[in-house]
Length: 301
Image 1 (spheres, helix red, strand yellow):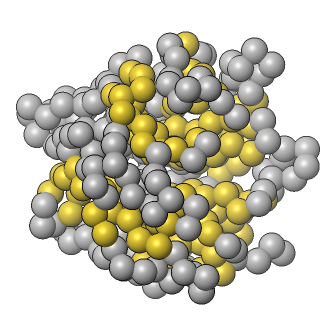
Image 2 (tube, rainbow, N blue to C red):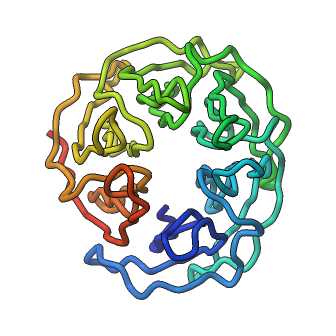
């Protein structure tokens, strides 16, 4: 994630530590490169992977996540908030609300002060992981706390590892899986409109894309960019873009230059006209994770 002139890595998994609570940050230079990485003063209060992170009014919000893939693993319902100081450091994480139920492998997006949470699972265990179709909304108050969640109309299918991106008052959901194991990857893009009362219209399909999960989607101006992910039989390196016009219609997907290597479960962000992709797994059947960061200049066509 990027906030101001700093990049952050918040929790996750790596080969050395497994699931961890560490938070790292580094300055972004004017040339778009990174300075030295540092540990924040305050790590997360618990070890997390598959959590979602959102930024709102200069603060990080961490939603849910889990502590591992084993029979006794637990999924979190906590919502954590932190505000970096002027030097980029985080000195405290505070609980500011609670999800309506424990959630992992879900998606989070927002419009103004309103949060929307799509799908996910209440468990993350080898023989007990069921993807759900629930959609929730809640309001972020002026003091940074998150209010009670309201359950909205369900997603058209159970969905996990989907991405959700807001453009104007429309939420675009890209691909994902309808089943955890075996995966049932979906090649759909759906859209829902945010209503005046902050509820959503029913999600409807508006296009197709290569089926995948554990991908990343970023927004550059009005263009959605879907980056790599895990397909049915291989890990992708493709990068595809589709623009949302002024009427909210999604255009066709076109291919951008691919990543130098295949990636899934990676992170991506946009800063000063560049798309950055960091970390992730390289191939199926391996726990090898990457420390590399790639950068792609993005110019509107």
